[in-house]
Length: 109
Image (cartoon, rainbow, N blue to C red; front, side, top):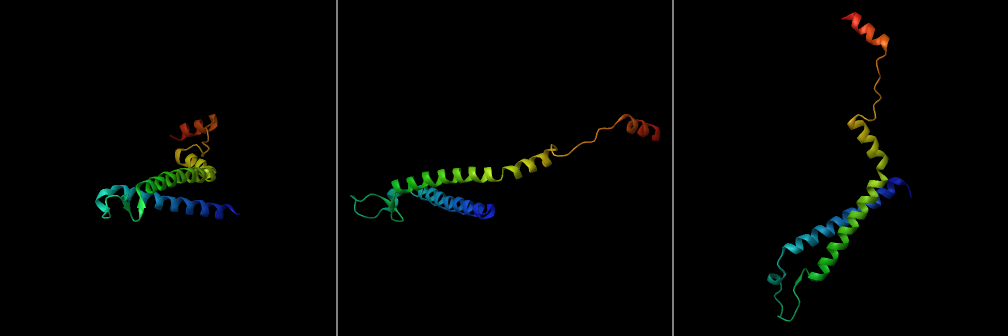
């Protein structure tokens, strides 16, 4: 599998995990007791899923995002280093003035 295809698959996995984590986070904002209109013996649910299912989905999708983000970072490491060097000046070679250059600059002034 090419690097571009691998990155696409990793990004798709990260995106799916983001959707799952975001949906489960929104589910936690809804009070489960206010949604359940079934009998009092039924466990409260949201969109047909119990709190435990939402919690498990949230936890594993978050871990999947972290792992995917780490793999993504590792695969882009050389680009990150190159970009950081060019941004912060570490990638540019600065020419030092030798005695003849400094002397000619002083004579011109």
